[in-house]
Length: 427
Image 1 (cartoon, one colour):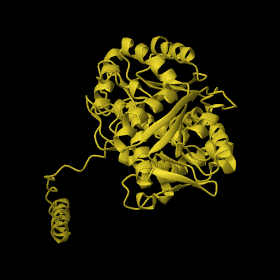
Image 2 (cartoon, one colour):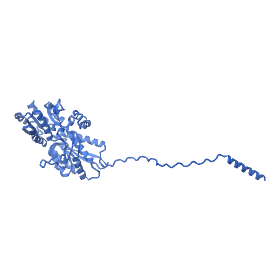
Image 3 (cartoon, one colour):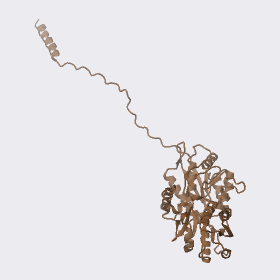
Image 4 (cartoon, helix red, strand yellow):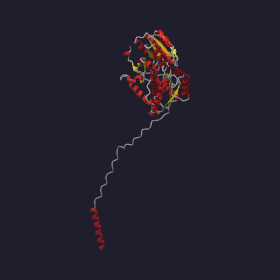
């Protein structure tokens, strides 16, 4: 009885304590499920696919009589190679990156050496395109080789016959050049001679493909301007004496036109000036080089010649469309060569290489070598509004140069330097 009462009391106390305890909290509702998935970490941009290298065969007259032209051209090829490496090559239209290798060779200013090197680059090295030929003779020696192999070739020489078959008067399908022709030079010379009242000239030219082309161009152009060539004769590029000057004196000509490159053009300049101190001397664009002044010295003073704009880039008006390109190129060249003077021949190499690179950039990956070569040829023929050191180039199936002679500037040697001679100062 007593145990039952005590048990009841304990049970009652337990119930009361339970009733007085803090209520059990109501569980919080589950968090809402997000309706937008959290942003995934950014996917790294894949590196561009890398394709096989492209090879440009570069042949210049680094030694021999054409070295004053070929050395600056070689310098430009080395400079452009460094620039290409620094930017990691080129990227094609499909986003594939390609290394560009410029294989530089010397033709020694010899036609047979040029032909041999061209064959090696085409057959053994597998070049896609040739930038080849400082001089007209070696360039012409390579033309049939490139044509037969169906390899596009961009010459750095001037003769019209390089790109146009003299017999058919048609463009050579595989050959191009960014270099103004002797015909362009003769047109500018004729404009100048007519403006200053010259009607009788003598024409002395080196006995090479280049020199012969200067004379043929003058014969084609000068009569149309009322200018008679009363005496014309050739001299060897290696000559140091010029008996032709005696016949110049006897001819009664009012000016002497010289179709040659330094140092030969400088030496004949000296001979003419010594014999005829007051006569006008007009060079072709082959003499647009500091080597003319270096080798002719004071005898070069007052001589005039049509040249590419690069030679006087800092004197061009700000409105000239290629002034800034030329200024940038001159700075890059002189930085690379540690101050070497600029020449138009450096510009020839630069323009030729830019043509080649522009064409290579059009190639999709996966083409065979033959397909690459054909595609580059097609791209070269389609270049439009491309700025270069000499002007704006527009190529077509009927014109593998795309240059107008009015893009030349006439320059005069004054105080040992080249200066622009504007048309309104021709007198």
